[in-house]
Length: 115
Image (tube, rainbow, N blue to C red; front, side):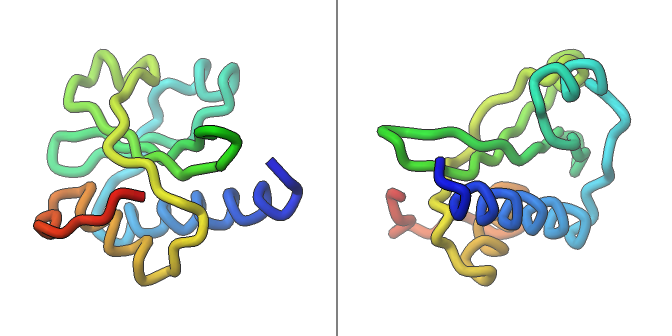
């Protein structure tokens, strides 16, 4: 990942966490040991599901990942499933919409794009 992509990634990850908070997700004080060990972000609880924003590269292209799990045991050790992989190029409006989809606030549209 380039320095520019790293900066953009951090900005977008922080933005996703602000959206989590905006929509009522509550930060959890869990998985602190593994968070430090593996560089994982804060976990949030929203309507009995645990969420976290993460990052990954596919074929050398960086993506934001929204993770989710409904089992507190797995959330407690940082094990979650990917809800979606999102390109860094999303606008703030698009990113907020993706968070709304992931949290179940808004249904995914029938013509949902394949990033």
